[in-house]
Image 1 (cartoon, rainbow, N blue to C red):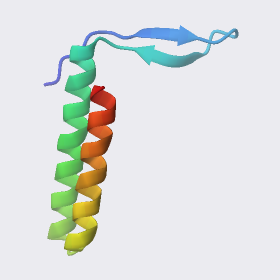
Image 2 (image 1 turned 45 degrees about the horizontal axis):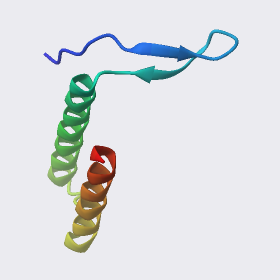
Image 3 (image 1 turned 180 degrees about the vertical axis):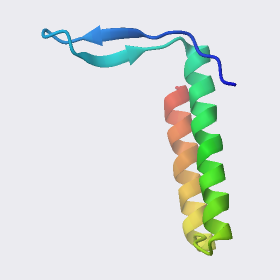
Image 4 (image 1 turned 180 degrees about the horizontal axis):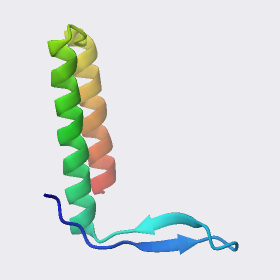
Length: 73
């Protein structure tokens, strides 16, 4: 089971939650979990015959790597 620390919420003038601040460890845990879920969804798509063509998959992987690098900076 994934364990994360409770976030701090940023509220607008009406008291509505508009953002959450989490510690970096929790953020990385959540990011890893999302990536795992995406992998599972991709595997299920393959099983249903809805796989991406190879060239599209390469483009998607490159996009994901670039996004991760931007987030790490």
